[in-house]
Image (tube, rainbow, N blue to C red; front, side, top):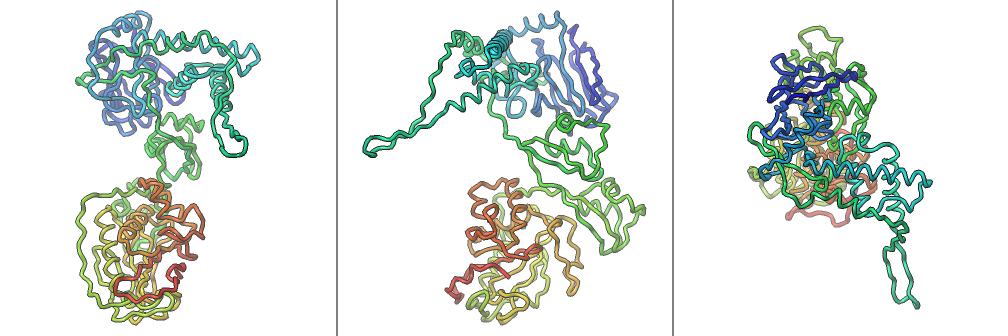
Length: 609
């Protein structure tokens, strides 16, 4: 179509146009594309812009790493685009431009009947905004009227009586929420007018409590203040904005035959809730990686922080991000290998590219990493996905090991030594790993359930239980009745080494080496046995478990049952409770089994030692 072009703006603000003369325009980083964009964030074959037989323009992402973005929503499938709509491709912003002749021809073609929509296809949660020509005129008249009302409101001294109300206000707020760039739709005065109208609506929602004579009845109701302004144009304004409602839906067809949904303004669904996040830059991190991490356009990251692609990203710098995706921060660990290793073996061990490992450790120039050398490694913790319908193995335990008394004043009759099972867990010291039958059976089941249900690649280290006869077990205050066990914090992939459990040289993981997703998954497995009294962990670490649980999709009810945070260290009605000093392991206390002879004093609910 003659007169059609693509305007390209790079991260420095430099802008140019590219004529659109064929049926499609391939966009990417490599030279075989029609439009070559070489800056960061652009994939080799990024996206394609094309036209359908009716003249409508469409865009399709080609599986790019960072995605193709229409406004602040990621394009899915084949999506119709309008002139002026901002399209983010890596660090570039593209927009479709028509001259007058092209606009007239496109407007005429929009009147052509199109197939009905078979299924919603569009951009993220909102969908593409594609209007018929009548809609465009109504849209323009709507903006003009809002502009005029805002001017009247300003000239009159901005009185409340001239604010928007009812359906008019709702339409204006929907429009602001819908458009990709509010500044292109309304000026500063109009935005202030609409915001003031929204605030006025909230102020006018008054709840009154009226007493009835004698105090017999209490009436609670909402009474709205009277509206003093007569909006003579209200019906006309509402009618014009919605005048195409009820007409047949329209659709566009992509080059591959895919149907693209055409949505009206009133059909825009609620956007996904976004939160403000502070991201601390780590060594060798790029804008592209940060944008991908939070699933936002690179352009948005640069705009939020007043930077461009030439801005150095110093480690430790804090960037502002607004996203619906809130991953846990990267964790820095210090690693000293037990044996000689290579960069490639370390990359496989930690699932971190060699180039990143070398960037984290510029002081190491050798190709071989000698035993005991100290390396800094940044690991990105990954949320564990729960698998359904898994088969958990059965564990047979003799029933004669009896727990007697209380955790701080008890003993074990015919104790069981917790069995070896290197596929599921490591035993720190078998000589102090004696317990009752009830705990032996349910602890094995919980560990197996966790291992089979989640793809956890780290290690579970089971540590102190009780001495063989039970009783006093220094330095512990509890661990006397065969129902208590210390388990090291599950560590991130690659952290654990065999030397960590050698007698006299043990090295428990520190909090920065812990896999908090794995810990929450293990807590769920323990909870699902129905046989755990409590799990103890220092309260200052509860928030890490809480955040991991939320990322893994835990409901509010589940969080209330599982974790004391944020209600305080004193709270004792959850599975995970506070115990001072428990910063590198959890202390699990099991309930009494059917054959146990436990104390009824209630001392079982005391914190772990």
